[in-house]
Length: 197
Picture (cartoon, rainbow, N blue to C red):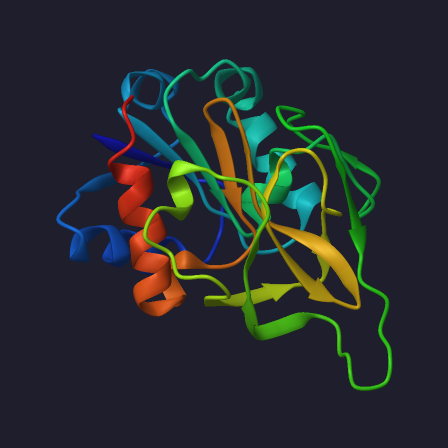
Protein backbone atom coordinates (compact mmCIF):
# COMPACT_ATOMS: atom_id res chain seq x y z
CA UNK A 1 0.00 0.00 0.00
CA UNK A 2 1.22 3.47 -0.90
CA UNK A 3 0.40 6.35 1.42
CA UNK A 4 0.37 9.86 -0.02
CA UNK A 5 0.72 12.35 2.81
CA UNK A 6 -1.87 15.10 2.51
CA UNK A 7 0.28 18.21 2.90
CA UNK A 8 -2.24 20.42 1.12
CA UNK A 9 -0.55 20.32 -2.29
CA UNK A 10 -2.54 20.83 -5.46
CA UNK A 11 -0.74 18.17 -7.52
CA UNK A 12 -2.01 15.15 -5.59
CA UNK A 13 -4.56 13.96 -8.18
CA UNK A 14 -1.93 13.92 -10.94
CA UNK A 15 0.42 11.94 -8.67
CA UNK A 16 -2.34 9.40 -8.02
CA UNK A 17 -3.09 9.08 -11.75
CA UNK A 18 0.61 8.53 -12.47
CA UNK A 19 0.70 5.72 -9.91
CA UNK A 20 -2.47 4.19 -11.36
CA UNK A 21 -0.86 4.13 -14.82
CA UNK A 22 1.87 2.00 -13.25
CA UNK A 23 -0.71 -0.36 -11.74
CA UNK A 24 -0.35 0.97 -8.19
CA UNK A 25 -3.10 2.15 -5.87
CA UNK A 26 -2.63 4.78 -3.20
CA UNK A 27 -4.46 6.44 -0.35
CA UNK A 28 -4.33 10.16 0.50
CA UNK A 29 -4.06 10.46 4.25
CA UNK A 30 -2.95 12.32 7.36
CA UNK A 31 -3.51 9.21 9.52
CA UNK A 32 -0.30 8.36 11.37
CA UNK A 33 -1.08 4.63 11.62
CA UNK A 34 -1.84 4.39 7.88
CA UNK A 35 1.40 6.20 7.01
CA UNK A 36 3.48 4.08 9.38
CA UNK A 37 2.08 0.81 7.99
CA UNK A 38 2.41 1.76 4.31
CA UNK A 39 4.90 -0.08 2.07
CA UNK A 40 5.92 3.26 0.55
CA UNK A 41 5.21 6.89 1.36
CA UNK A 42 4.97 9.87 -0.99
CA UNK A 43 5.23 13.45 0.23
CA UNK A 44 4.04 15.75 -2.57
CA UNK A 45 3.88 19.49 -2.21
CA UNK A 46 3.04 22.65 -4.13
CA UNK A 47 3.14 26.10 -2.59
CA UNK A 48 5.06 27.64 0.28
CA UNK A 49 7.28 25.85 2.80
CA UNK A 50 5.86 27.65 5.88
CA UNK A 51 2.29 26.65 4.95
CA UNK A 52 3.22 23.03 4.24
CA UNK A 53 5.16 22.68 7.50
CA UNK A 54 2.26 24.19 9.44
CA UNK A 55 -0.08 21.66 7.81
CA UNK A 56 2.20 18.77 8.81
CA UNK A 57 2.61 20.16 12.34
CA UNK A 58 -1.15 20.64 12.81
CA UNK A 59 -1.68 17.01 11.74
CA UNK A 60 1.01 15.79 14.19
CA UNK A 61 3.02 14.32 11.30
CA UNK A 62 6.47 15.82 11.89
CA UNK A 63 7.87 13.05 14.08
CA UNK A 64 5.92 10.41 12.17
CA UNK A 65 7.70 11.32 8.93
CA UNK A 66 11.12 11.64 10.58
CA UNK A 67 10.85 8.11 11.98
CA UNK A 68 9.70 6.33 8.80
CA UNK A 69 11.83 3.34 7.75
CA UNK A 70 10.14 2.40 4.46
CA UNK A 71 11.03 4.15 1.17
CA UNK A 72 9.86 7.80 1.22
CA UNK A 73 9.78 10.05 -1.85
CA UNK A 74 9.28 13.80 -1.64
CA UNK A 75 8.09 15.57 -4.80
CA UNK A 76 8.78 19.24 -5.62
CA UNK A 77 8.16 21.16 -2.37
CA UNK A 78 7.89 17.74 -0.74
CA UNK A 79 11.57 17.15 -1.53
CA UNK A 80 12.52 20.52 -0.03
CA UNK A 81 10.59 19.69 3.15
CA UNK A 82 12.96 16.75 3.74
CA UNK A 83 15.88 19.16 4.24
CA UNK A 84 16.90 21.19 7.29
CA UNK A 85 15.82 24.76 6.63
CA UNK A 86 14.26 27.01 4.00
CA UNK A 87 14.92 30.69 3.48
CA UNK A 88 11.27 30.87 2.43
CA UNK A 89 9.73 32.36 5.56
CA UNK A 90 12.86 31.37 7.55
CA UNK A 91 11.30 27.95 8.07
CA UNK A 92 12.69 24.90 9.87
CA UNK A 93 11.93 21.78 7.85
CA UNK A 94 11.89 18.05 8.62
CA UNK A 95 15.67 17.73 8.76
CA UNK A 96 16.02 14.15 7.49
CA UNK A 97 18.39 15.41 4.78
CA UNK A 98 21.14 17.94 5.41
CA UNK A 99 20.82 21.15 3.41
CA UNK A 100 19.24 24.59 3.14
CA UNK A 101 16.73 25.76 0.54
CA UNK A 102 17.49 29.15 -0.95
CA UNK A 103 15.89 31.31 -3.64
CA UNK A 104 16.90 31.59 -7.26
CA UNK A 105 18.10 35.04 -8.26
CA UNK A 106 16.28 36.43 -11.32
CA UNK A 107 18.55 37.42 -14.20
CA UNK A 108 18.11 38.47 -17.84
CA UNK A 109 16.78 35.46 -19.71
CA UNK A 110 16.35 33.52 -16.46
CA UNK A 111 12.91 34.02 -14.97
CA UNK A 112 11.88 32.93 -11.50
CA UNK A 113 10.18 30.58 -10.89
CA UNK A 114 12.23 28.07 -12.84
CA UNK A 115 9.44 26.61 -14.93
CA UNK A 116 9.73 24.08 -17.72
CA UNK A 117 11.97 21.27 -18.90
CA UNK A 118 15.59 20.87 -17.84
CA UNK A 119 18.10 18.05 -18.19
CA UNK A 120 19.22 15.78 -15.36
CA UNK A 121 22.94 15.35 -14.75
CA UNK A 122 23.45 12.14 -12.79
CA UNK A 123 26.23 12.52 -10.24
CA UNK A 124 25.83 9.31 -8.19
CA UNK A 125 24.51 5.82 -8.74
CA UNK A 126 21.11 5.12 -7.20
CA UNK A 127 18.19 2.72 -7.86
CA UNK A 128 15.89 5.70 -8.64
CA UNK A 129 17.96 6.33 -11.78
CA UNK A 130 17.82 2.77 -13.14
CA UNK A 131 16.91 2.82 -16.82
CA UNK A 132 16.93 6.63 -17.02
CA UNK A 133 18.97 7.78 -20.05
CA UNK A 134 21.74 10.31 -19.54
CA UNK A 135 20.68 13.97 -19.82
CA UNK A 136 16.97 13.10 -19.66
CA UNK A 137 14.62 16.06 -19.47
CA UNK A 138 12.10 16.48 -16.63
CA UNK A 139 9.56 19.16 -15.75
CA UNK A 140 10.19 21.74 -13.00
CA UNK A 141 8.17 24.49 -11.32
CA UNK A 142 10.00 26.05 -8.35
CA UNK A 143 11.46 29.28 -7.00
CA UNK A 144 13.60 27.76 -4.22
CA UNK A 145 16.31 25.12 -4.55
CA UNK A 146 18.78 23.04 -2.59
CA UNK A 147 22.40 23.45 -3.75
CA UNK A 148 24.09 20.26 -4.96
CA UNK A 149 25.66 18.37 -2.04
CA UNK A 150 26.62 14.91 -0.78
CA UNK A 151 22.97 13.78 -0.93
CA UNK A 152 22.57 14.81 -4.60
CA UNK A 153 21.95 11.93 -7.02
CA UNK A 154 21.19 14.15 -10.02
CA UNK A 155 21.69 17.88 -10.49
CA UNK A 156 20.53 20.61 -12.86
CA UNK A 157 21.78 24.06 -13.77
CA UNK A 158 19.62 27.17 -13.75
CA UNK A 159 22.03 29.95 -12.97
CA UNK A 160 22.84 27.94 -9.86
CA UNK A 161 23.67 24.24 -9.79
CA UNK A 162 20.93 22.62 -7.75
CA UNK A 163 19.74 19.25 -6.50
CA UNK A 164 17.22 17.63 -8.85
CA UNK A 165 17.18 14.25 -7.07
CA UNK A 166 18.38 13.66 -3.52
CA UNK A 167 18.70 10.49 -1.47
CA UNK A 168 19.93 9.41 1.95
CA UNK A 169 19.03 6.02 3.41
CA UNK A 170 15.28 5.49 2.85
CA UNK A 171 14.52 9.16 2.12
CA UNK A 172 14.52 10.37 -1.48
CA UNK A 173 13.29 13.45 -3.27
CA UNK A 174 12.66 14.81 -6.76
CA UNK A 175 12.65 18.60 -7.16
CA UNK A 176 10.82 18.14 -10.46
CA UNK A 177 7.39 16.62 -11.06
CA UNK A 178 7.83 12.98 -12.14
CA UNK A 179 4.07 12.76 -12.67
CA UNK A 180 4.39 15.45 -15.37
CA UNK A 181 7.69 14.31 -16.85
CA UNK A 182 6.52 11.74 -19.39
CA UNK A 183 8.29 8.40 -19.74
CA UNK A 184 11.31 9.52 -17.71
CA UNK A 185 9.15 10.48 -14.74
CA UNK A 186 7.19 7.24 -15.05
CA UNK A 187 10.45 5.26 -14.98
CA UNK A 188 11.59 7.05 -11.82
CA UNK A 189 8.25 6.38 -10.11
CA UNK A 190 8.41 2.75 -11.26
CA UNK A 191 11.90 2.45 -9.77
CA UNK A 192 10.60 3.84 -6.48
CA UNK A 193 7.70 1.39 -6.45
CA UNK A 194 10.02 -1.55 -7.07
CA UNK A 195 12.47 -0.76 -4.26
CA UNK A 196 12.52 -3.27 -1.42
CA UNK A 197 10.64 -1.94 1.60
